[in-house]
Length: 306
Image (cartoon, rainbow, N blue to C red; front, side, top):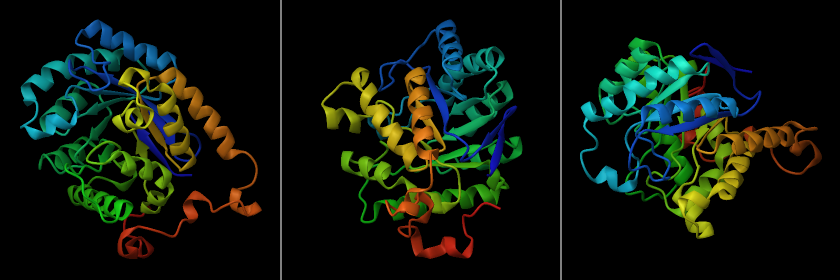
């Protein structure tokens, strides 16, 4: 099994599913859980650690679709929101802290303040200085697929191709492959049907050869499917998390840590029990899927970890 060092912790991919807890320090979070008080944010992170979170992801800018229509939050305002929280949380918990930002300036300051991982929803594409900043710090990075406006002819193939382009940006900057995690970008420029398809076909993205993070928690495709507001999407999130784990997700990024840790443990137990499904003719293993990475490049080793 391959592994990665994040902060002071070793993460062994495939051994079990890791849970990333979300701390939103923004007043306009889509999920309704944003906090603007420092003590509340620190207490939330501590509780997530007690509930079983393996990482804490701190973000200061809302990712509501309408926020992409403008220039985004000013870096100075984002720094004012996240740096005090990163400093306090990193000192208060033992699990690694992640900074959710696409701005190199914010990432650099957050890493210096105690963060160990950069979670970039633009996959190093929005800020040309981000790849160099991550490389210089020697930090792991989550590269997420993001296509505002959507429009796909080959959903999984196009996501795979785009993620490989982000991987190349990382490589060119000197980021080691064992420090790269990929995220297909649930909810970012995708329709309800496309988000469902990503989860259903997540195993195909394993052919890219990198650990996968997925973040379905409380998102609108769940609300559209069940006709429920963000605060009532726990069961829908649980279903999405369980099926993502069945498809090979290595990290699930969630709001409701206690419940999703239980879901992850149960899903892991089911996935790991007994012989592989294909041995009894019930279906192919996740890694045996033959479809949908672009131009068969992966057969030649492109995108494969050492």
